[in-house]
Image (cartoon, rainbow, N blue to C red; front, side, top):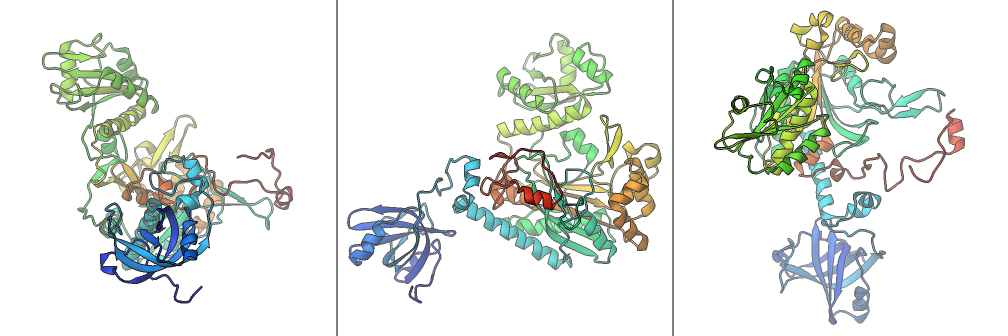
Length: 594
């Protein structure tokens, strides 16, 4: 290959101002069309497409070689830029074309199993199996470039704020709390196992003990849990920790970060400070600890209004310390039919609700699915709670309190979606604060940490640890964008006595605590600063800000919803010799499929 045949331009950058230039382009053939004495070749790289023309002026050998080009051949061409006669306004280079004078075929290609175009309708598993082809699509190239810009902006901001980027170990000690760990056997220490980190939580606290003061890391994390659109078994966090801070200090830094990030990657100005909602307020009003505030439809309690009702579903809910709540979908009485409401009822069953009562307010009367138990005056009294007016639709759920919140919280967003109220160009950022420190499991008869066992209670609630742990609020905070949690964190416990009390409520004995977290507790003996931090889901931020619906669209090589890599076949079996070397015996028979 001639030395001068080095690439001069990318395929998506040439414009009319480049007319007359001799250029060298290299990339993949998108398509090749032969029209007798002319061959048109669309040449593609990550920046876009340029039309290349081979005409009868070129040597016959070159023309014949160009005629053999097919989709996904990798080639290089030298030629002259000219104004295009039939312009193509669909592509950025549509005003020009390159008349080729030389051609090099670097690699021929078989017919690909998926089309290399953004509107390809291949199944996701097929896309993931041939991910190296899928990533050639302009959309996927754009998504990965966007993620790069997001990560770069993150580093720029935290570097500028005096944070130090520190890597923490991947091979950790198993400390079963929260999600399941991924376990790695040790060959050197037979019978012992490492755990892949669910987060760098303990190590970043130890960095504060070490005097690091401000730490951050783009950290790889692993959780063996059920998957969905915004989860992967391995994912990436923007992880950070600060010493000598309180909640307001951390929130202030994060608001500056998000303001910087939105401006840098989207050129969008967001207003600060963000609204703050307490956990209790968010649940009462929106049925969710990650409320979407781009629309109204807030929950209202009907407990007092229907307390003496003979309607058995309402009565049973209130007798068992449950809840009766509803939402007024203003102006929607005529917009949703009985069939639509039946679909909403089926929708909320996925969240544990058994049924959905409805009320439609007309000009002269109120119709309802509960007319048999409520007269017009009683229905009007219910409607008054919602400031109901003619044309409004009220939907009501009665059940256990957590089921009511979950069902209505999801229902308000489902209805908002059908009404096209979910504007992706609107960025409503908010904080949710004052979470409960514990959640109680009736099945296990014990308390669990709502975040993790190192979260500090509010100072004014510490005495309640001995009397009523269910009322203790945490110094914890989540950052939410349009109904999706971007990240969360807390002020940590830095006092050994308070940490022991936390473990006591969780039912961890001194022996268990030392076995799992002894290295952290030992470190606390030698002077620990007050500290706190936060972690963002980088994949989730990239997904939301790029307008995608799944984090798999912003990860180069993701797993599918069964945690399988369709491309490599991971996870896979290991040989009997390897198992023996690790002192492990498998009870699972080998098959060809996971």
